[in-house]
Image (cartoon, rainbow, N blue to C red; front, side):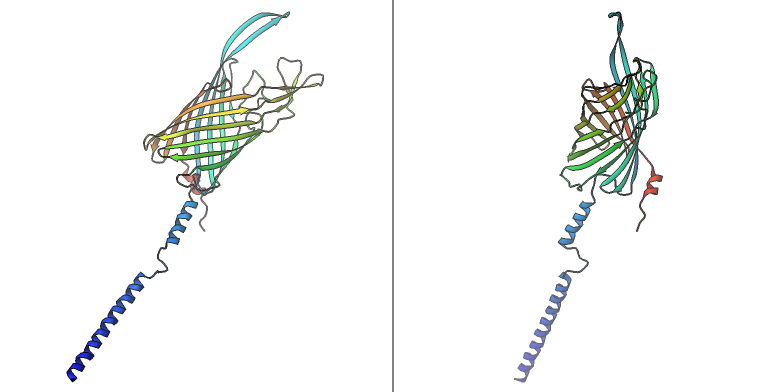
Length: 347
């Protein structure tokens, strides 16, 4: 009886120890499976994804600086009529072919003020030649300042939207100040403001893009330009018409190093008004007709280094008011020194 009691007591102790060991193991397992403060939760993962998405913009990163160089050549062919009158009769009539050549070197500087806001300026150096009058001109063109803003971050599969605006100065030689037949102008002669919207969407391996813009030219007054072949008539004011621009196209990646793009660029310019003053002081208003231009562009992008892509393009005019041929070359310029200088100080 005593031996049986001892056996029963030992069994109870063993069972108690076993349950104690199992309870300890369960407690340890619970501690191991319990959520730690440093562990990643679903909420934290989503938060990190959203934060990463918020920083994805197609514009330049904050504090970055870039410079690009582009070379553009345009050719415009035309036929000029030369008619000579005497006693209300035509004494001479001739048709002279003419050709205008224009070369523009553009230096563009961009600075990422924020991840979704980029500021820039473009400085053009212009060279022109007119074969009909055998005259030319070289000098600074109209410097422009621009800004690009992305209101929303880039989301894969969605359309990217960019709002842009620019202000063009009249730093080039004005056509209202140069003497006609002596020198060609290198600028437009007036200030202008423009704003627009650009959209793009990637449909791998093709990227579709399009844009539209509206341009307002500030009227130029107090010109006082003497018109040639007149009896002292002065050009007093010029009121350029508003313009609407639009473009669209696609870019296709042929390989990692080569891409191809095709686009159409068009614009419509409203009538321009001119105010003339005769020698007697009377004023006359004349309106030019509206103009429509369209250009079909083809471009080839070639990767010449891991970080450098050179674009070569050719364009053909589609309307009477468009250049006949356009050639272009563009490439980025490495300015590591300036990049380091404009980097924001770390907090």
